[in-house]
Length: 418
Image (cartoon, rainbow, N blue to C red; front, side, top):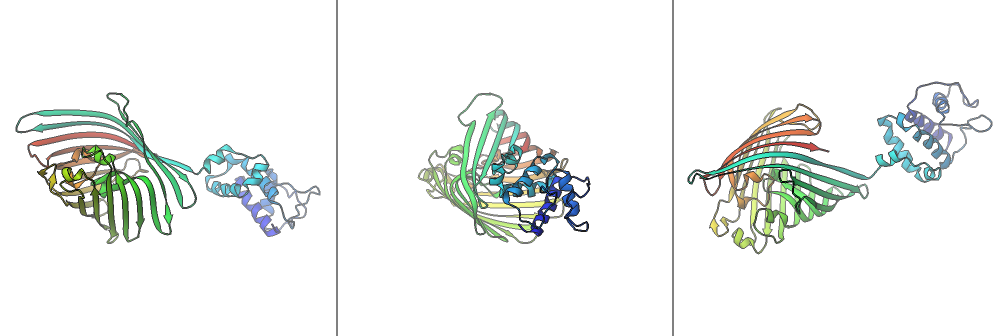
């Protein structure tokens, strides 16, 4: 390293030391008017810099990587005094001179944690719900309730600057029965996610959410690619199994294909369209077609700074469900006011939604109380604290295939994001 580089590093390390005391010049060979004098004085005063035996700085001499590592080690010893702003620079220096620091025996656990390539995020919720289903002709009434804890964690380990290895873990607990079940703890997803040029790629088993989870919100085993800016395109090819089992159609794996498009018409309007295709032997009975498909169109429109309107329409290729004629079109219209923002305590949102969701128009949805029903939902979300959201909703609807079958549902939920 030449003199100019050495003096620049000295100034950098001074910033990292985050101290403000002053001292007399300990090195006689540094001119009083040199730009780096105050920095070197401070480094010497803080014990971060030592001269040679002749009490000179010898800034014209090159230094070794080992000497540079000694400087970094002294800064690491004062790590608690370093600002968050400068921590990134210290991390970079530490990685660059890692072999020399290891030779010096410098191994800071807190630094290793900060530079760890494994990231964990996800969410958890506590849900309480009461539901009533009644038949207006027979007069029968079925009441049910639940108290449930659910957590989903996404663990991403960085392979390199472009690729991550990702696992998704699900914890599901019925708090009323407190009984252990086979699906209490599941490894739901294992995949590698990355980029090839400007194209995003997922390979393995990964979570998918389509059209606000109206058609499909479960896990796919296969491949997904996403590309485009103004016209964003996502193509998926794979298989689904648990999704079909959950809605009672088949326990066999079913082939799945999807092509989804989102287009930003302008800053306030987004259009979307999609095609979904399934293929499985048992579907010939459950959906009247071994290879049924679903087409969808939708939009989202910001009316002003507070109000937003979204709409959705889909049509299934089949109109037969388990040998009987069935509804094959779905609609949704959602009017919302403001919105709960994760990092803004006391922010809130209110929405009113109408949705018709026949069984033929979905693969699996996480709004299961609306499965094969049509009706209205009124809800509000409120940020109780940063990353802690409360959600209260009321739903009233009727069975798509039987208008005498009515449903009322109240659900309260607290969801925590991490």
